[in-house]
Structure formats: C-alpha cells, structure tokens
Image (cartoon, rainbow, N blue to C red; front, side, top):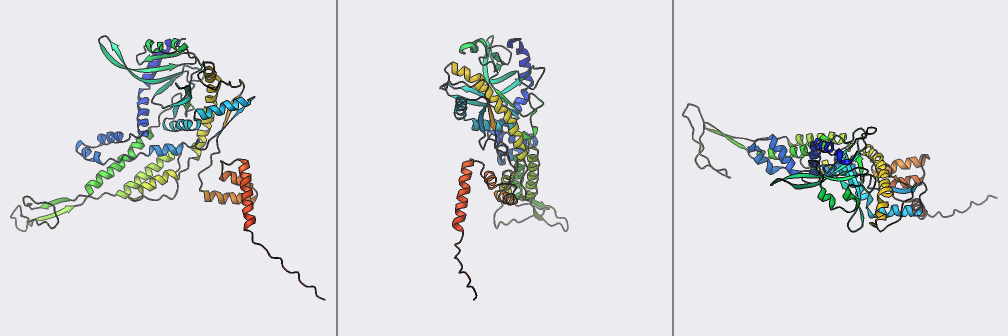
Amino acid sequence: MALKDDIPQLVAHVQSQASLIRHNADIFDIYEGNLKPHVECALQAQLSMDSFSQAQHRIAPINVLTKIIDKLSTIYQESPTRNVEDEGSESDSELLKWYEETLRINPMFNISNEFSNLFKNNLIQPFVAEDGIPKLRIIPSDSFTVYSDNLIDPTRPTHVITYMGKRAKAVGSDTKTVDIWHVYTDSEFLIVDSEGEVQGQEMARLQGPAADGVNIYGRIPFVYVNKSTNLLIPKPDSDIKAMTILIPVLISDLNYAAMFQTFSIIYTINAMLPEGARMAPNAHWPLQAETDADGAKPEIGTIKPNVDITETLNLIQSELAMWLNTKGIRPGAGIGNLDQESFASGISKMIDESDTFEARNKQVNLYKDVEAEFWELLLDYMHPVWSAGGLVENRALFSPNARVITNFAPQVPLMRRGELVKDLKEEVSAGFATRMDAIRTLNPRLTDNEIDDKIEEIDGERVMELPEIEPQPEPEEEE
C-alpha cells in the first residue's frame, strides 16, 4: 500500500494525539524556563479575581523541574566507550571516531536522555547541514508523533510524522491556517497538511528522488527513543506538570498569606474614629462612643493574622520528597525540617544528595539499544548515501559485518568519598579486592597505565616518609 493511501488514518491519528502533544508542549515550555504563566493560570483558577489581582504580584516561579531532570540524566556525564566488533577494520574505527567528534555524540545524546526523562520518548535525527557537516537533531515530544500498522510488533513505528509549523492555505477568496507535517516510512516521504492534502509545491522544491516522494535511505531516518516497553506512544507522566506547578503555587500562597500577616486588622467596639484619623507613630485618636448606653465604653483593638510558615514549608518538603521517590530519586537523609532560612538550601540539598542508582541502571539498558540502532542507521544506511553523493568529506565506508558496541561506565550507588575510601580499605585488607581495583573505583577515568603510575607514586612517597633506623651496636659477649 502506498503512503498516500495511509494519509486519512494518519490525519485521524495526529488528531487523536492532540491533547498529548499540547501536554508535552506545556512541559517543554516549563523546562525551557517559562513557568510563571502556568502558575498564574493555576492561581487564577483557584482564587477570586480580587484575591488573584493581589496574589499575582507575589508569585514565586521556582522551577525545580530542570534540576530534577538534570539529576536523573547523568549516564552520559562520564563518556561511554564505543568500539567496532565483528570483522571491523582500522578504517571502521577511524570512521566511528570521526562521527563521534563531528556529531558531538555525548552532549547530544545527553539531551536525548534528558528528553526521555521529561517526555518518556524523543527522536534522534542525523542529517547533513548546508555546510556539509553531519549533525544531530534531538526532537522533543511536542514536535512529532509515530504510528504503526505492524501487526506482529505494534510497538515498532512504521511511520514517523514530524511537525514543521503552520502555513496559510487559500480557501476560495479567504485563507486559513493549517499544520504542516513531514511523513516518513522506510521507502517513502511526503509533505502533507493537517487536512490530509499533499503539498505538491513544497515537494517540488526538494532535490533528487525526495521530490518524487522516495526515501533515499531505505529506512526511516530517525531513531525513536521510547521508555515504554508496552506502548508505541508512552502515556504521559501527569505528575510532572502538576507537581512542577504545585510547588510554586504553594510557595506563592505563603507569600500571599505573609503579605496580609504583615498588616494588623483594626476593629472598634461602640466607637467612632475621628475624621481624618491616620496610622502614624505617636498618633492620638480621641474616640467618641456611638451610643450613650450605661456602661458602654468605646474600645479599639487589633487582630494580627498568623500563618504557620514553617509547617507549610515542611508540607512542601514532604510532598516534594514523595514525588522524587516516584521518579526514582531517593532523597538524601539528614535534611530535617525546613524553616524560612533553610528552605532554599534544604530543597537543593534534598535533590543534590539524592540517589538515582536504580533509575540510571534502567536508562543504561535503554540507551545501549538506542546506540546500537543509531550506529546501524547512520553507518549502514545514511552514511553510504552521503558518501556516494559527496555530501560529507569522509568517504570511507563501514564494513558490512561490523557493528558498534557501546559500554557505559558502571553505575554505582551514591556514596560520599570518605565512606567509599573506608569500605575499599576494608576490602583490600580482607583480600577481597586489590589496590588497583580500589584506585580504579575511586578514579574511574584513569587508564590501567595511569593507575600503575599512581601506585608507583604512592609507594614512592611511602618510602620517603619512613624514618631512618640507626643500627644498634651488637651486645658484647661475656667471657
């Protein structure tokens, strides 16, 4: 079946994903730093207009989302090693290294890792820029969707649909705005609008076979990263948006309450305030009774609003800690209760000292498969086309049976260095580990030769520090 025949069901599929795409667009907007409008919207829905007009000036747009995602996305902070196996030649290794450096693989894959923790899916797209330099594009989940008509494995996408913006479309004497989508399969490519009409003029502007709707690579030119093993499109984490907005809303509530706590409410009983009475130091108000009833004396007093700020801050801390646990982030111990002075540092410490060991291990397993699919797509399908067309300067071809194996640094539980040194010392003393093992654990970036040099350096310092022992005279023999 031709791709044109799939367009009606693809349009229906895109429309069915509209709410998910809007949800992910909001999350991406917050992640990029635009949190305040979302907090304003939440407060406006909860407060009266009079209250909101006061509260909006005291909104605290404290964005914890970026810090949480950064905490979760660390598997590329220590560069993984990539090697060519299975009949790989020296030129294969050189081509792999060239692409690693040219594409800035680790920083770009780190962005993909962040998006996988933010949206649970994303697209990785290799392409050649106008200057002839290969590059990577990481596409967030609000700018694409996937579709599958694979009856054997419906979790494998057979169509990738990327959003390319809006266009004005003529309708008689009027115009209307439509969305433009690029649709890819293993063999075809089309540009269509949100009404399912193929954009012939835009297709005609393309060069080569793509103008005729041919996918020259013979494979969808994307790697689809999906954290769900059960669904083609993962369900969104509804807690991410809700909790990211709730925390600044609660803090803004405190700011709003503290504003009224600053001012006391003046009340009077059987009293008339003199005309023009003003609040001022040493002010004198001659009160006049409203009635002449016997024993009725004019009185004036104040009511001071009282907000338990510390208890509310601890509530925010508890809710944040529970949320972090659900994301695979175990908050560090010993944070204690928060108050006005320690709140900011306490929240930061909670995230900084949290452990993501289990979450990181799951991500390593996911990205081993992602890397394998990526290098196969790039080196076996896309690079030969680029090389044959003279689009890239490196024309070497990858060996047909070679493959790239990616090894990530071992993920270890969070442990302070002092505790780690103590544990390693006990293991070495007990004979369960060598000094080389211990130094490698403490300094994972060192090579074996550098570790050997380190051991020699340590042994040399120990010899220098040993005190000189003067020889003792031998005892005289008794006659």
